[in-house]
Length: 353
Image (cartoon, rainbow, N blue to C red; front, side):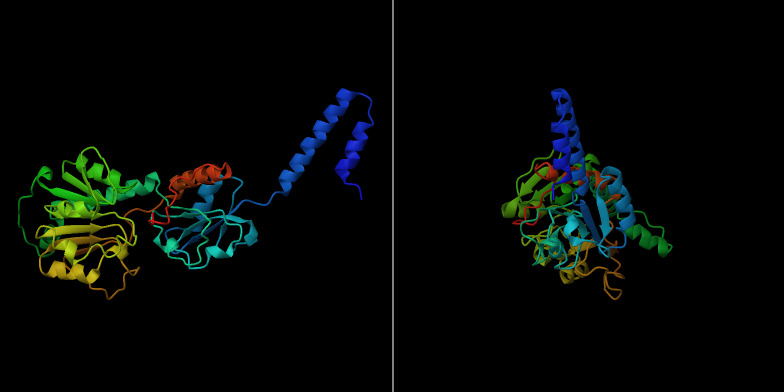
């Protein structure tokens, strides 16, 4: 059977006018290209989130605004799995991503990617990108400022006195007399450190590799951690979870801080040894802690953190990715991937971030 396109070409070539022939050939070629374009496999993305806050519909709406041709599907209704090229996920169950044979990229809903990298069936050839968009960074900056100021002004004691109807005043040091240390100076920790410094605090930062930030004294590596801790009264942990940072917030680290220091952990729950935190609070090494992340989430109702007078618990909401702004970054990465260009916020799986 002769292909319809071939029949059409034969008809065109019987015409005497050469220019007319060329015009007809171009027209048929254009028609053929459009036909083939219509036959292309749908570009589809699968969405999964373990947290209720990351709802499917807002993400679908935001992604369709920036990528109208993208077919966004909930994990419960994947359709033809062979059409899934991208995955936007938060803490997917192990083995889930391996079920999509044509997966080209995995995008984390948040900045953390430890749950992805701990999946033994994660396709090794598929790039993983973490989410560090402007809304996430701004949220973490706001959270850190809020709780640094609470610790600095001893707000917890004021609230305790209020409940006991006690009118007790006490002086607070100037911000310039208070040393605040930021652990982690990456895409989130760097802006946070500069914001804290902008409030007038003596700000010091520590990271795995050397960094330079205006207004922030930067230290790095094992040789820098001791000097970083010495004299730091408020520690803010914004580190990613890696083999090097797991359990880093322990009794040995606390012992290097000034007596009565305070801790804010908005990094990852796997970085803190919770028993050591309770012990440090009870012996006065730590005066108060604010924790946004935990080893087991949601935090069990019977966990001692809930009712401890020196612990502030927040439900892992220090910074929540906003679909409206994050979708733009996702669109940039999908377009870059289609153009064979380097991806933004690409994770180095050898180091974990």
